Length: 236
Length: 198
Image 1 (cartoon, each protein chain N blue to C red):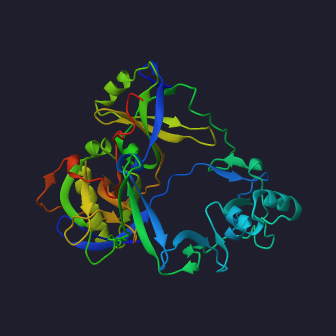
Image 2 (spheres, rainbow over the protein chains, first blue to last red):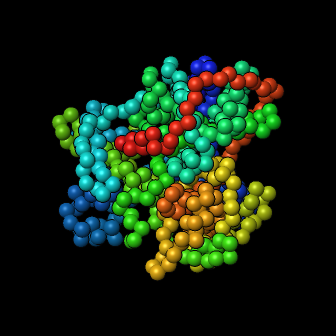
Image 3 (tube, rainbow over the protein chains, first blue to last red):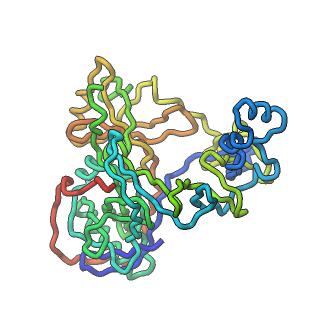
Protein backbone atom coordinates (compact mmCIF):
# COMPACT_ATOMS: atom_id res chain seq x y z
CA UNK A 1 0.00 0.00 0.00
CA UNK A 2 1.13 3.55 -0.63
CA UNK A 3 0.85 6.62 1.56
CA UNK A 4 1.09 10.23 0.45
CA UNK A 5 2.67 12.23 3.25
CA UNK A 6 4.28 15.63 3.57
CA UNK A 7 7.41 16.47 5.49
CA UNK A 8 8.70 19.39 7.56
CA UNK A 9 9.18 21.48 4.40
CA UNK A 10 5.64 20.78 3.22
CA UNK A 11 6.99 18.60 0.40
CA UNK A 12 4.98 15.46 -0.21
CA UNK A 13 5.96 12.04 -1.53
CA UNK A 14 4.39 8.68 -2.14
CA UNK A 15 6.07 5.98 -0.05
CA UNK A 16 5.32 2.39 0.95
CA UNK A 17 2.99 1.82 3.87
CA UNK A 18 3.18 -1.68 5.32
CA UNK A 19 1.23 -3.52 7.98
CA UNK A 20 3.31 -4.70 10.92
CA UNK A 21 2.95 -8.30 11.99
CA UNK A 22 3.82 -9.69 15.41
CA UNK A 23 6.96 -11.78 15.75
CA UNK A 24 6.13 -15.49 15.79
CA UNK A 25 8.58 -17.65 17.66
CA UNK A 26 6.50 -20.82 17.63
CA UNK A 27 5.01 -22.87 14.86
CA UNK A 28 3.49 -26.33 14.72
CA UNK A 29 4.65 -29.51 13.01
CA UNK A 30 3.01 -32.91 12.59
CA UNK A 31 4.23 -36.13 14.22
CA UNK A 32 6.85 -36.56 11.48
CA UNK A 33 8.19 -33.07 12.08
CA UNK A 34 6.76 -31.66 8.85
CA UNK A 35 5.17 -28.24 8.67
CA UNK A 36 1.37 -28.06 8.56
CA UNK A 37 -0.96 -25.44 7.18
CA UNK A 38 -4.35 -24.14 8.23
CA UNK A 39 -7.23 -23.81 5.75
CA UNK A 40 -10.73 -22.45 6.15
CA UNK A 41 -13.56 -24.85 5.38
CA UNK A 42 -17.30 -24.62 4.96
CA UNK A 43 -18.89 -26.02 8.12
CA UNK A 44 -22.51 -25.14 7.45
CA UNK A 45 -24.57 -22.75 5.36
CA UNK A 46 -27.81 -20.87 5.98
CA UNK A 47 -29.84 -23.51 4.14
CA UNK A 48 -28.96 -25.96 6.89
CA UNK A 49 -29.02 -23.80 10.02
CA UNK A 50 -31.65 -24.03 12.75
CA UNK A 51 -33.87 -21.27 11.33
CA UNK A 52 -34.07 -22.97 7.93
CA UNK A 53 -34.71 -26.38 9.44
CA UNK A 54 -37.43 -24.90 11.64
CA UNK A 55 -39.18 -23.42 8.60
CA UNK A 56 -39.28 -26.82 6.94
CA UNK A 57 -40.02 -29.01 9.98
CA UNK A 58 -42.20 -26.57 11.98
CA UNK A 59 -41.13 -27.78 15.45
CA UNK A 60 -37.96 -28.56 17.38
CA UNK A 61 -39.15 -32.07 18.17
CA UNK A 62 -39.67 -32.75 14.47
CA UNK A 63 -36.14 -31.49 13.81
CA UNK A 64 -34.79 -33.76 16.57
CA UNK A 65 -36.33 -36.79 14.96
CA UNK A 66 -35.08 -35.76 11.52
CA UNK A 67 -31.55 -35.23 12.85
CA UNK A 68 -31.47 -38.85 14.02
CA UNK A 69 -33.13 -40.27 10.93
CA UNK A 70 -31.73 -38.44 7.92
CA UNK A 71 -29.11 -35.77 8.82
CA UNK A 72 -30.96 -32.80 7.28
CA UNK A 73 -28.37 -30.42 8.75
CA UNK A 74 -25.59 -31.75 6.52
CA UNK A 75 -24.90 -31.31 2.82
CA UNK A 76 -22.29 -33.98 2.21
CA UNK A 77 -21.44 -32.60 -1.23
CA UNK A 78 -20.66 -29.09 -0.04
CA UNK A 79 -19.63 -29.17 3.60
CA UNK A 80 -15.91 -29.44 4.10
CA UNK A 81 -15.03 -27.61 0.88
CA UNK A 82 -12.17 -25.12 1.09
CA UNK A 83 -13.33 -21.53 1.25
CA UNK A 84 -11.41 -19.13 -0.95
CA UNK A 85 -12.33 -15.82 -2.58
CA UNK A 86 -15.38 -15.29 -0.42
CA UNK A 87 -17.24 -12.00 -0.44
CA UNK A 88 -19.66 -10.25 1.87
CA UNK A 89 -23.19 -9.61 0.61
CA UNK A 90 -26.39 -8.24 2.04
CA UNK A 91 -29.33 -10.62 1.98
CA UNK A 92 -32.96 -9.75 2.67
CA UNK A 93 -36.00 -11.97 2.24
CA UNK A 94 -35.73 -11.12 -1.48
CA UNK A 95 -32.30 -12.74 -1.66
CA UNK A 96 -28.98 -11.01 -2.35
CA UNK A 97 -29.53 -7.27 -2.65
CA UNK A 98 -27.38 -4.53 -4.11
CA UNK A 99 -29.35 -1.45 -3.12
CA UNK A 100 -28.93 -1.21 0.64
CA UNK A 101 -30.00 1.45 3.08
CA UNK A 102 -27.55 1.33 5.99
CA UNK A 103 -28.37 2.95 9.32
CA UNK A 104 -25.84 3.43 12.12
CA UNK A 105 -27.19 2.91 15.61
CA UNK A 106 -24.88 4.79 17.96
CA UNK A 107 -24.98 3.76 21.62
CA UNK A 108 -23.42 5.34 24.69
CA UNK A 109 -21.04 3.31 26.86
CA UNK A 110 -23.96 2.44 29.18
CA UNK A 111 -25.86 0.95 26.24
CA UNK A 112 -28.41 3.76 25.93
CA UNK A 113 -29.20 5.01 22.43
CA UNK A 114 -27.37 8.17 21.40
CA UNK A 115 -28.60 8.48 17.82
CA UNK A 116 -29.64 6.74 14.64
CA UNK A 117 -28.18 8.14 11.44
CA UNK A 118 -27.62 7.17 7.83
CA UNK A 119 -24.32 5.47 7.40
CA UNK A 120 -21.72 7.70 5.85
CA UNK A 121 -18.68 5.84 4.58
CA UNK A 122 -15.66 8.09 4.87
CA UNK A 123 -13.21 7.70 2.01
CA UNK A 124 -9.67 6.58 2.78
CA UNK A 125 -7.32 9.52 3.14
CA UNK A 126 -3.85 7.99 3.29
CA UNK A 127 -3.28 7.78 -0.46
CA UNK A 128 -5.07 10.66 -2.16
CA UNK A 129 -4.01 13.83 -3.96
CA UNK A 130 -4.04 15.58 -0.58
CA UNK A 131 -1.06 14.34 1.44
CA UNK A 132 -1.25 13.57 5.12
CA UNK A 133 0.00 16.67 6.81
CA UNK A 134 3.12 17.21 8.92
CA UNK A 135 1.15 19.26 11.42
CA UNK A 136 4.11 20.54 13.40
CA UNK A 137 2.29 19.36 16.54
CA UNK A 138 4.42 17.14 18.74
CA UNK A 139 3.74 15.18 21.87
CA UNK A 140 6.47 13.72 24.05
CA UNK A 141 6.77 9.96 23.66
CA UNK A 142 6.41 9.36 27.39
CA UNK A 143 3.31 11.54 27.53
CA UNK A 144 1.72 9.76 24.56
CA UNK A 145 2.52 6.31 25.98
CA UNK A 146 0.80 7.12 29.26
CA UNK A 147 -2.29 8.64 27.65
CA UNK A 148 -3.14 6.57 24.58
CA UNK A 149 -3.04 2.94 23.53
CA UNK A 150 -1.55 2.43 20.09
CA UNK A 151 -3.62 -0.46 18.88
CA UNK A 152 -2.40 -0.52 15.27
CA UNK A 153 0.88 0.25 13.58
CA UNK A 154 2.12 0.73 10.04
CA UNK A 155 5.69 1.12 8.88
CA UNK A 156 6.65 3.73 6.28
CA UNK A 157 9.40 2.61 3.94
CA UNK A 158 11.19 4.49 1.16
CA UNK A 159 10.74 3.44 -2.45
CA UNK A 160 13.89 5.04 -3.91
CA UNK A 161 16.93 7.05 -2.92
CA UNK A 162 15.08 10.34 -2.80
CA UNK A 163 12.39 9.05 -0.51
CA UNK A 164 15.03 7.41 1.70
CA UNK A 165 16.31 10.90 2.46
CA UNK A 166 12.77 12.17 2.82
CA UNK A 167 11.83 9.57 5.43
CA UNK A 168 15.19 9.44 7.19
CA UNK A 169 14.90 13.16 7.70
CA UNK A 170 11.52 12.80 9.36
CA UNK A 171 12.68 9.90 11.55
CA UNK A 172 15.76 11.81 12.63
CA UNK A 173 13.83 14.84 13.77
CA UNK A 174 11.34 12.74 15.70
CA UNK A 175 14.12 10.64 17.22
CA UNK A 176 16.01 13.70 18.39
CA UNK A 177 12.89 15.31 19.78
CA UNK A 178 11.92 12.05 21.50
CA UNK A 179 8.40 12.96 20.39
CA UNK A 180 5.56 11.77 18.24
CA UNK A 181 4.23 13.98 15.48
CA UNK A 182 0.47 14.21 15.16
CA UNK A 183 -0.50 13.42 11.58
CA UNK A 184 -3.80 14.51 10.08
CA UNK A 185 -5.56 14.06 6.75
CA UNK A 186 -7.99 16.01 4.60
CA UNK A 187 -7.86 19.35 2.79
CA UNK A 188 -7.62 21.30 6.03
CA UNK A 189 -5.36 18.77 7.71
CA UNK A 190 -7.79 18.27 10.56
CA UNK A 191 -9.20 14.79 9.92
CA UNK A 192 -8.34 11.50 11.62
CA UNK A 193 -6.81 8.77 9.47
CA UNK A 194 -9.04 6.38 7.52
CA UNK A 195 -7.18 3.57 5.80
CA UNK A 196 -9.99 2.20 3.66
CA UNK A 197 -13.44 3.39 2.65
CA UNK A 198 -15.85 3.06 5.55
CA UNK A 199 -13.01 1.92 7.82
CA UNK A 200 -12.35 2.93 11.40
CA UNK A 201 -10.97 6.37 12.13
CA UNK A 202 -7.70 6.64 13.98
CA UNK A 203 -5.68 9.37 15.56
CA UNK A 204 -2.28 8.94 13.93
CA UNK A 205 1.10 9.67 15.47
CA UNK A 206 4.36 9.40 13.60
CA UNK A 207 7.24 7.88 15.54
CA UNK A 208 10.81 8.00 14.26
CA UNK A 209 13.89 6.15 15.36
CA UNK A 210 17.33 6.16 13.80
CA UNK A 211 20.33 3.88 14.26
CA UNK A 212 23.47 5.05 12.43
CA UNK A 213 22.36 5.38 8.81
CA UNK A 214 19.16 3.35 9.26
CA UNK A 215 15.75 4.66 10.15
CA UNK A 216 12.45 3.33 11.43
CA UNK A 217 9.33 5.37 10.81
CA UNK A 218 6.14 4.05 12.36
CA UNK A 219 2.65 5.40 12.07
CA UNK A 220 1.21 4.65 15.51
CA UNK A 221 -2.59 4.50 15.34
CA UNK A 222 -4.85 4.93 18.31
CA UNK A 223 -8.57 5.02 18.86
CA UNK A 224 -8.58 4.53 22.61
CA UNK A 225 -7.20 6.48 25.53
CA UNK A 226 -5.56 4.93 28.55
CA UNK A 227 -8.28 5.71 31.06
CA UNK A 228 -10.85 4.09 33.28
CA UNK A 229 -14.32 3.78 31.77
CA UNK A 230 -16.99 5.51 33.84
CA UNK A 231 -18.91 2.24 34.10
CA UNK A 232 -15.98 0.49 35.81
CA UNK A 233 -15.66 2.09 39.20
CA UNK A 234 -12.46 1.50 41.19
CA UNK A 235 -14.74 0.51 44.11
CA UNK A 236 -16.32 -2.39 42.21
CA UNK B 1 -0.30 -11.99 41.73
CA UNK B 2 2.35 -9.39 40.94
CA UNK B 3 5.74 -8.97 42.57
CA UNK B 4 7.56 -5.63 42.60
CA UNK B 5 10.74 -4.85 44.51
CA UNK B 6 10.14 -7.85 46.77
CA UNK B 7 6.55 -6.90 47.57
CA UNK B 8 3.74 -9.16 46.41
CA UNK B 9 0.14 -8.11 45.86
CA UNK B 10 -2.90 -9.48 44.09
CA UNK B 11 -4.75 -7.57 41.41
CA UNK B 12 -8.00 -8.13 39.64
CA UNK B 13 -8.16 -7.62 35.89
CA UNK B 14 -11.04 -6.04 34.02
CA UNK B 15 -10.80 -6.06 30.26
CA UNK B 16 -11.64 -2.76 28.64
CA UNK B 17 -12.18 -1.78 25.04
CA UNK B 18 -13.26 1.18 22.99
CA UNK B 19 -16.96 0.52 23.50
CA UNK B 20 -16.54 0.86 27.28
CA UNK B 21 -15.13 4.38 26.88
CA UNK B 22 -16.88 5.86 23.89
CA UNK B 23 -19.86 3.66 23.10
CA UNK B 24 -20.46 1.59 20.01
CA UNK B 25 -21.87 1.76 16.52
CA UNK B 26 -23.93 -1.03 15.00
CA UNK B 27 -25.08 -1.02 11.42
CA UNK B 28 -28.64 -1.99 10.52
CA UNK B 29 -29.38 -2.63 6.85
CA UNK B 30 -32.60 -2.62 4.85
CA UNK B 31 -33.52 -3.35 1.25
CA UNK B 32 -35.31 -0.79 -0.92
CA UNK B 33 -38.70 -1.87 0.47
CA UNK B 34 -37.57 -1.51 4.05
CA UNK B 35 -37.14 -5.23 4.74
CA UNK B 36 -34.27 -5.94 7.15
CA UNK B 37 -31.13 -7.33 5.56
CA UNK B 38 -28.23 -9.19 7.04
CA UNK B 39 -24.61 -9.34 6.06
CA UNK B 40 -23.59 -12.84 5.01
CA UNK B 41 -20.60 -14.48 3.39
CA UNK B 42 -20.96 -15.67 -0.20
CA UNK B 43 -18.73 -18.57 -1.20
CA UNK B 44 -16.84 -18.51 -4.49
CA UNK B 45 -19.45 -20.80 -6.11
CA UNK B 46 -21.73 -17.73 -6.14
CA UNK B 47 -24.64 -19.45 -4.39
CA UNK B 48 -23.58 -20.81 -0.99
CA UNK B 49 -24.37 -18.31 1.77
CA UNK B 50 -23.04 -18.70 5.26
CA UNK B 51 -23.48 -16.95 8.53
CA UNK B 52 -21.10 -16.36 11.40
CA UNK B 53 -20.00 -19.75 12.64
CA UNK B 54 -20.41 -21.28 9.20
CA UNK B 55 -16.72 -21.86 8.79
CA UNK B 56 -14.16 -24.09 10.45
CA UNK B 57 -10.39 -24.21 10.40
CA UNK B 58 -8.70 -27.43 9.39
CA UNK B 59 -5.05 -28.30 9.84
CA UNK B 60 -3.52 -30.09 6.87
CA UNK B 61 -0.24 -31.94 6.43
CA UNK B 62 2.00 -31.48 3.39
CA UNK B 63 -0.12 -33.98 1.42
CA UNK B 64 -3.33 -32.11 2.17
CA UNK B 65 -4.62 -34.67 4.68
CA UNK B 66 -6.43 -33.48 7.77
CA UNK B 67 -4.37 -33.63 10.98
CA UNK B 68 -5.81 -33.67 14.49
CA UNK B 69 -4.64 -30.60 16.38
CA UNK B 70 -3.81 -32.58 19.49
CA UNK B 71 -1.16 -34.51 17.54
CA UNK B 72 0.75 -31.35 16.60
CA UNK B 73 3.99 -30.38 18.29
CA UNK B 74 5.01 -26.77 18.97
CA UNK B 75 8.57 -26.03 17.82
CA UNK B 76 10.77 -22.96 17.84
CA UNK B 77 12.27 -21.34 14.75
CA UNK B 78 15.13 -23.91 14.83
CA UNK B 79 12.61 -26.74 14.77
CA UNK B 80 13.28 -27.77 18.37
CA UNK B 81 10.24 -28.87 20.34
CA UNK B 82 9.38 -26.41 23.06
CA UNK B 83 7.79 -26.78 26.47
CA UNK B 84 4.41 -25.27 27.04
CA UNK B 85 4.05 -22.33 29.40
CA UNK B 86 1.84 -22.08 32.48
CA UNK B 87 -1.00 -19.69 33.03
CA UNK B 88 0.12 -16.50 34.80
CA UNK B 89 -2.76 -16.76 37.24
CA UNK B 90 -1.99 -18.41 40.54
CA UNK B 91 1.75 -17.72 40.32
CA UNK B 92 3.77 -14.69 41.32
CA UNK B 93 4.74 -12.56 38.31
CA UNK B 94 7.88 -10.51 38.83
CA UNK B 95 7.67 -7.01 37.34
CA UNK B 96 10.79 -5.67 35.64
CA UNK B 97 11.33 -2.14 34.40
CA UNK B 98 10.62 -2.00 30.66
CA UNK B 99 11.99 0.20 27.92
CA UNK B 100 9.43 2.59 26.45
CA UNK B 101 10.45 1.70 22.89
CA UNK B 102 9.75 -1.97 23.62
CA UNK B 103 6.32 -1.00 24.92
CA UNK B 104 5.61 1.09 21.84
CA UNK B 105 6.71 -1.78 19.59
CA UNK B 106 3.91 -4.07 20.73
CA UNK B 107 1.07 -5.25 18.55
CA UNK B 108 -1.64 -4.80 21.16
CA UNK B 109 -4.02 -7.69 21.81
CA UNK B 110 -5.93 -6.56 24.87
CA UNK B 111 -6.14 -3.91 27.58
CA UNK B 112 -6.95 -4.51 31.23
CA UNK B 113 -7.46 -2.13 34.10
CA UNK B 114 -5.90 -3.31 37.37
CA UNK B 115 -7.72 -2.99 40.66
CA UNK B 116 -6.95 -4.35 44.12
CA UNK B 117 -8.71 -7.52 45.18
CA UNK B 118 -11.20 -7.22 48.01
CA UNK B 119 -9.43 -5.88 51.13
CA UNK B 120 -6.28 -5.52 49.04
CA UNK B 121 -4.20 -2.51 48.14
CA UNK B 122 -2.17 -1.57 45.06
CA UNK B 123 -0.95 1.80 46.33
CA UNK B 124 2.63 0.47 46.22
CA UNK B 125 2.21 -0.25 42.50
CA UNK B 126 0.49 3.06 41.76
CA UNK B 127 3.28 4.95 43.55
CA UNK B 128 5.88 3.26 41.36
CA UNK B 129 3.87 3.90 38.19
CA UNK B 130 3.38 7.57 39.05
CA UNK B 131 7.07 8.16 38.33
CA UNK B 132 6.38 7.24 34.71
CA UNK B 133 8.06 3.85 34.83
CA UNK B 134 6.63 1.01 32.79
CA UNK B 135 6.99 -2.59 33.95
CA UNK B 136 6.79 -5.83 32.02
CA UNK B 137 6.48 -9.54 32.59
CA UNK B 138 5.73 -12.59 30.44
CA UNK B 139 2.00 -13.33 30.50
CA UNK B 140 -0.23 -16.18 29.47
CA UNK B 141 -3.93 -16.16 30.28
CA UNK B 142 -4.59 -19.90 30.08
CA UNK B 143 -1.14 -21.31 29.45
CA UNK B 144 -0.08 -22.49 26.02
CA UNK B 145 2.84 -22.56 23.67
CA UNK B 146 4.34 -19.14 24.37
CA UNK B 147 3.97 -16.07 26.51
CA UNK B 148 2.65 -12.73 25.42
CA UNK B 149 4.23 -9.56 26.78
CA UNK B 150 2.37 -7.80 29.57
CA UNK B 151 3.23 -4.15 30.19
CA UNK B 152 2.01 -2.49 33.36
CA UNK B 153 1.61 1.24 32.88
CA UNK B 154 -0.17 4.02 34.73
CA UNK B 155 -1.98 7.19 33.91
CA UNK B 156 -2.33 9.67 36.76
CA UNK B 157 -4.93 7.65 38.64
CA UNK B 158 -5.00 4.04 37.55
CA UNK B 159 -2.88 1.07 36.59
CA UNK B 160 -3.35 -0.77 33.32
CA UNK B 161 -1.98 -3.93 31.80
CA UNK B 162 -1.44 -3.97 28.04
CA UNK B 163 -1.02 -7.41 26.47
CA UNK B 164 0.78 -7.67 23.17
CA UNK B 165 3.39 -9.27 20.99
CA UNK B 166 6.58 -7.72 19.73
CA UNK B 167 6.05 -6.28 16.25
CA UNK B 168 8.34 -7.34 13.43
CA UNK B 169 9.93 -3.97 12.65
CA UNK B 170 12.94 -3.62 10.44
CA UNK B 171 15.14 -0.55 10.29
CA UNK B 172 15.43 0.69 6.70
CA UNK B 173 18.84 1.46 5.32
CA UNK B 174 20.44 3.39 2.46
CA UNK B 175 23.75 5.24 2.34
CA UNK B 176 22.70 8.87 2.72
CA UNK B 177 21.75 11.23 5.55
CA UNK B 178 19.68 14.39 5.30
CA UNK B 179 19.77 17.80 6.95
CA UNK B 180 16.79 19.51 8.53
CA UNK B 181 15.03 22.77 7.88
CA UNK B 182 13.32 24.58 10.72
CA UNK B 183 9.60 25.22 10.65
CA UNK B 184 6.97 26.49 13.02
CA UNK B 185 6.43 23.94 15.74
CA UNK B 186 4.20 23.53 18.72
CA UNK B 187 4.20 21.30 21.79
CA UNK B 188 0.63 20.24 22.55
CA UNK B 189 -1.21 18.56 25.34
CA UNK B 190 -2.99 15.22 24.97
CA UNK B 191 -6.16 17.02 26.01
CA UNK B 192 -6.26 18.69 22.60
CA UNK B 193 -6.96 15.40 20.84
CA UNK B 194 -10.51 14.15 20.34
CA UNK B 195 -10.96 10.40 20.83
CA UNK B 196 -14.71 10.26 20.54
CA UNK B 197 -14.53 9.36 16.85
CA UNK B 198 -17.94 7.71 16.58
